[in-house]
Image 1 (cartoon, rainbow, N blue to C red):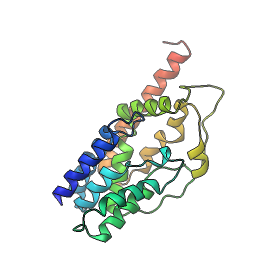
Image 2: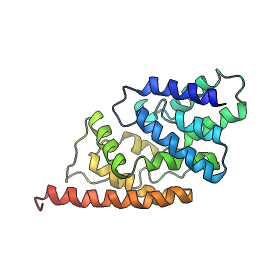
Image 3: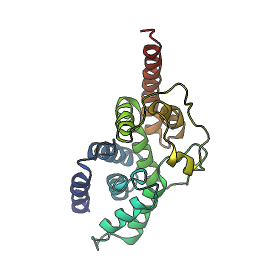
Image 4: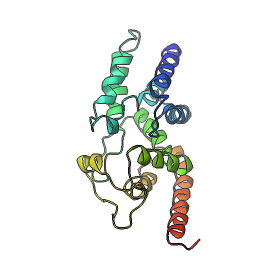
Length: 216
């Protein structure tokens, strides 16, 4: 199984190395290592966790016209190359990838297995804190979004379709998703790390608005 994980890491690194949206190999690497650490502490199935973490952004739905099946489809195409990998594990990995992403505050989350919850926590942690802030502005720039427009208020209680089609300024994304993640964490480890990263984002926003208004 270690050989499958190693080959998958190479495949993902080669596929995503030119990504500039914040869903690049470095993001995947952070999620992979964080998820593996949580999995060991939670006694979860490490093979499922590592492969799901590595493949979770192999075809991100936000870059495939909102197609939430693009990722699990690409993951399945890759994993089925390995006949020694149990079909149930492949199905579980694809289910995790399909259902782990935040898709609007009004969407009822799908109940994930422990392994899915771990990968979801690791992914959400990388959307928070200093790294999360950097990734958020990278994604906004990639999509041609304004940094901030006081006239455009954050959208609230979005369903999947409105979330996918939302084109608001990057600052709004903090209120539409990032500041909500702390209360959506699954594992004790995830909850602990999320507290500090959440506070960092709040401090950043306070400084941003103070500078925006010329108070600094």
